[in-house]
Image (cartoon, rainbow, N blue to C red):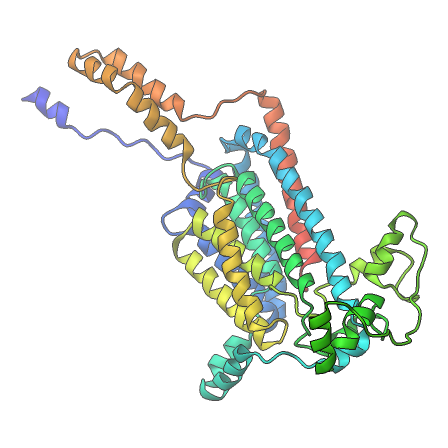
Length: 449
């Protein structure tokens, strides 16, 4: 009886690890959704810039300091640095690909903004947009407090970028599947593909802006159309007989009107960009100065780049983390969409297309990183392999054999480490410094959206 009582005695539970790192991990990865609380706190505290700038100035640095200390305290205990090291080259490749896509987009934005000339921007009427009509109608029906909430700048472009960076850093606390550079690679690769598709779309058909004054306020482009537009568009823009004839003959037959000549600076090897960017004497000495001023363009750019960033951030959170915070981020995406339409930055179709294109692109790039646990699949495969041996060992009561087989199963799910510990630690330090630098640049360069 005493032996039975001793057999039923409860085993002592292992004591949880102590220290700052363990406490921070329990906070961020706990059942209470600490990562979601941190993300909501970031958006909420940053909105204080409109409600109480003084409190915003106090709380925002404190919040970033707390998050940075949490990451620094956890980094030495992170177990997947070898996986991060293997993901480094694809990560750097995705950065280069994304920067190339941004350069192509910037050149194209300048082209579509300048090709028709400033006079076309001033005289072109915005397209009829039923989404804009609906929001104006709702302003008359909804309570004023709801309308004020819909108008509020709750979240902007840099918030979505920072929310994704927070998601990536949460890998240190086990909130998402490692490697963190894997999901970052997928995010930037998908962003680059989306930007290239967007560029091909808005270059294919030039649409008038919902803000007709934009080009005059932002650019110093020529007032007359580009020579290409002078020959192939202007003669057939409004005359129905001319349109019928060009359709019938399929030849640009009309004589070109007399326009001022084009300014042609000497840009050396980059002089081929003169016909695309259409510079003017007061816009700086090089092509790079023009691209820095390209900004969001002054045509309607199908589809919305801001909404693409928002949707990719929401889909990344949904797949990698889930929970109530993912639902909240999707609600913020919808809020951003209606504000883009309300403030006439985009037409409704731009936001609708950006939402489903972003979702589809994210699903198509699952081969780069997925929330599915590959180590679990390897352990299950190894378990199937040793199943018969495990059954025989159990029948023979061979405890040592059972332990050996279970150890093989456990080792099958572990990552193979082919580099020295010193190299991994150096890579870890470089990764943290590089990522924190990206955070500072994102805050600095995108704070205006």
